[in-house]
Image 1 (cartoon, one colour):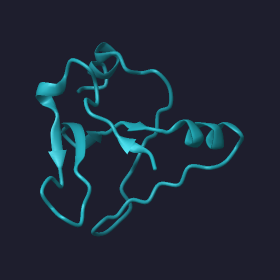
Image 2: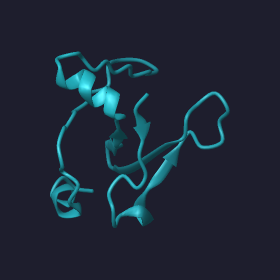
Image 3: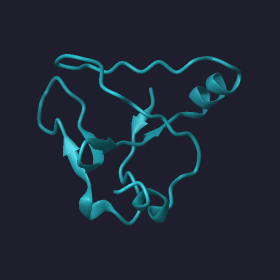
Image 4: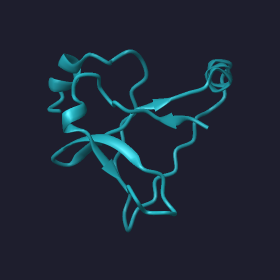
Length: 89
């Protein structure tokens, strides 16, 4: 299973929050936040990367308390702090 990765962005650890920390039935989620947005980073195993590379789909389940939460997925090496600062983080 893909792991949530911390630091989300190298060099911005001091701004990182951990959601659901200490709640037994939830995984702690390291994240960076800005008004209306949360940025998380997933790290896939080599097997998961191969599975996606040959055309299998990635499913995302979002648990909400009402309504659909808008989401945006980015794949690649957008790891530069400057890249994400342009997005407002």
